[in-house]
Amino acid sequence: MRRVVALMLAAFLAGCGGIDGVRAEGGKELELADPIAAQGTAERTISVYLLRYGKRVTVERTVSGTPSPEQAALQSLLTGPTPVEVKERYVTAIPAGAKLLDFALNNGAVEIDLGGPFETIQRNASTDDIEARQRQKLLEQIVYTLTEFDTVRSVEVRVNGATIPLLNNQFGGPALTRDVFDQPAVAAWHDQTRCTGNEKVGGRKSTRALRVAKPVVGAGVVSFAGETDAERGAIRVQLEQDGTLLRSLEEGATYNRPADGGTEPCAQFEGRVEIPWGVTGEVLLRVSVQPVDAGAERQPVELPLDIGNEADLAT
Image (cartoon, rainbow, N blue to C red; front, side):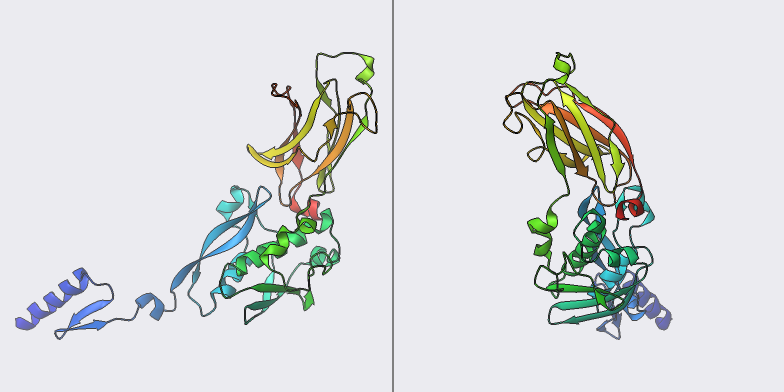
């Protein structure tokens, strides 16, 4: 009978014990090994970097407890966005099917070797143009994910043994750090705007202050052209998706002012705005004249566009 009572008491203490991982046995408290860790399934939360609406964003991942959380984070990044994240427009510049061939961490420097469908990345490896934007974003995602750890200072990325450079190795070698992606030569957009004429449109007044031709989408940019009868003000060009601003050309855009020493305000303008890498689906191009004074903004012209998939933007 006493044995039964003892067993019941032990079960009670084990089920209700106020100290996790401690069991009462023989009048002593014995520390228990973590049952999850003992089974090799301990987990930890890490962060990886994806892209959303053209911007770098961080998402949390749960990975199995391993001696190398840095390598686990990279492996998680290579799997890409989850199905739920894809529906919320998260994307990755890392091609599907990418595999980690080698991983080495020594004194804060990580060297990795990847394998998989990297033909486009390698083909444009020495250029800095719209076609090479995918490579830049790929490197940025990997570098930010790995340098999330205090143990990592720099990252070198190879594909089948060949180093992928950033801007043709203009930044001190193949080992990359976070700050390199903020440098003007790397962060610059491939935009272009200019005034093409400053004579009044058709020599007549118009009740419409702004007219914009149908934009052309291709090669990673939206090309636009228009004309205005507004006497003064800045031409503002914006690209947005789902109510989220993707790009805005204001200070860098054409101003409605005399061009090339002319005497009349700029009446005709044209330009292009780069589409952030990975943006697909329906977007909205908005062109407006923003007065230089405190007056109300003129009625904008809004034009819906359909952007092709990432593969179209990268080739």
